[in-house]
Length: 392
Ligand code: MTE
Image (tube, rainbow, N blue to C red):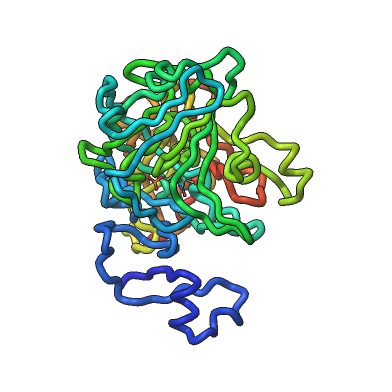
């Protein structure tokens, strides 16, 4: 039996309306049916689909298999007829374009391995200080995949970017119900990032993930992948690109995905959109529910260095005494630009050991701090990772 989270609607049906009485979000334990879209994930919500893998499965390989790759969607997967599909490119360009998949197929192909991570990864940890809304992610809203497709820079070159262009907007084909309007998911990136060409492009228009066509969960038939930026900038089910002198007015850039103490108009206006992700990491094994024998303990996990070109993981350390002393962990497996690094270590634990801690630093000066100030949307939680354990 595994615990799954039900959508609000399913919960209302399952509880005959009882859920509405409860201020806490109840989580029901049911035997889990296989996911119809083939995912092996823990569903935080099923409608829309928001799910993350068990951590032990997540770190089994450097490339994350699609079935273990987290899903973060704000609305149901849109139904897209590939025969009707076209990507439009407009705004500050000399020649607006309407590109079918076969038009895109005539441009040079590139493959990039890059880690995608949600800005809300580890959000649930903020609740110890004060409740945060949104999907209650633990530390599995991250994955590393081989993405293939067309460099955004090549498409923009074909459209001919005008001199006053400063931002490139992306718009998805999904339909998100927000209060009394329906909007697509969207956002933008600075033109300097968008125009980086070549084998490590600033942004990729990806049609493949790990050598296979994108699945509906991950943006079929086309999505952006923006290496180094939070996952929200990698827009799935891409329908439109707009080149502009301003950042996107879409809610998910203009308002959401900002670090604010309160969700008032002044706070939103005063803070800028998050683009690049900071260093982060987690301990994936052992399982915090297991009872561990005293003695030597093998520990493993991931660290993702700051999303800045040229940045590498510098130091990964584990503590068994709340950060009083630290022991180095070793990296293993592949290392690549904009990718996570898997690591393992061995520490000594006794019945007095109540938790393991992880901290890490990188060559951009990024480090996981002891504490991250609380923010209302629960973004960028990258403090020392704490794994409670029971030692017999
Ligand atoms: N694109 C669209 N169109 N709709 C979405 O809801 N979610 C974003 C981004 N792109 C989203 C989207 C967020 S917040 C993240 S973290 C990533 O997609 C997640 O990508 P994945 O589901 O492929 O892991």
